[in-house]
Length: 159
Image 1 (cartoon, one colour):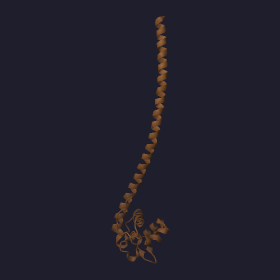
Image 2 (image 1 turned 180 degrees about the vertical axis):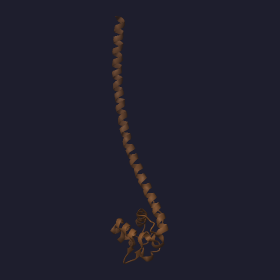
Image 3 (image 1 turned 30 degrees about the vertical axis):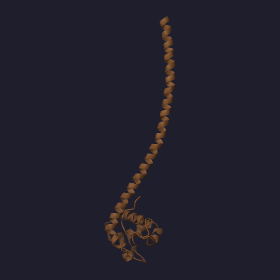
Image 4 (image 1 turned 120 degrees about the vertical axis):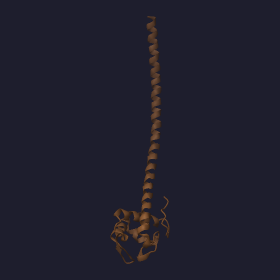
């Protein structure tokens, strides 16, 4: 009988100890979840930062591709201003075109221009340029308008 009482008392103590440990364990789990929640905000911020960096990288690649296309297809007229072509980076010469919007500029560059000031053959005279190529060149050229008053260099802007 005495052994039974000791076992019951020991079991009660273990049960009490387990319930106390269980409360501590619950507190530790809640604290851990709280900390993980705080990390989640950081991870979300990291994800947003990574997405922004990826978008900037894509833009930089498009600008670099636009520069290459510009140099091989557009620079002859747009660096010298021949046939009334607005010079690369000349804000005043591009202001009217910019006011029409990029979609109109892209359409005109694809179909060609025969205007009051000058002319441009469709796709700048290179019929192998795709619509996407033309858009990429326009992206590059318009990025140069916002970087200086008169910019005759063809370096990609730093973003």
